[in-house]
Length: 213
Image (cartoon, rainbow, N blue to C red; front, side):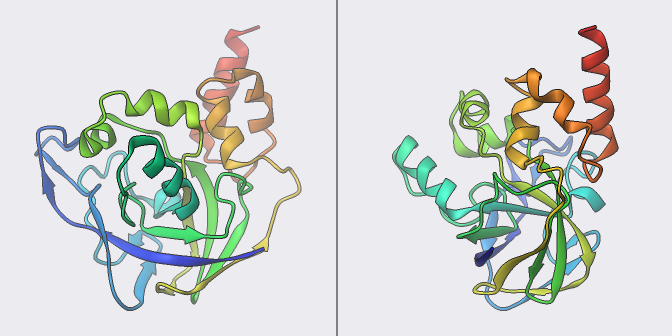
């Protein structure tokens, strides 16, 4: 499977009352940039991250969202959502982000990336869009985008291919993990099969399963 990078987006400093950082600053407002950008193990070079306790880090170094899913949201809320409008570093095209398998590897430009986990919507996201019930609607839609870790650093630019070069056999997808941890707890046992899923999520699944007896 091969898709494309529609845009590479970097966060600018946004100061607002809804910003999640204690200082009132957020990097959710990401803007498309020209030319290739360095993708490093700690994140995308030049990207502003406001609240590092919950954003960034090795398991969330890069965030990808599909242009096709953005088009659905544009129709849903009746306004154009530009690339970067979901706070994503990579806006993709013709690659199934929701159906991406945890642990699958993407060759993007000269970088090698690995799918790790879905994005969880937050109040900062809802405030940025100005849609009070966005968290509920985003959860029901269950097309959360994918966080990626960087297995090999490199450069990525708009127009670069996104090629799936390895896919684990367990088949647990970004969409399944999101639904299991939100509205469909019956899917929780599936999460234990995904070895590349961050251990914090697997442990949460174990606790929830144990509490259900």
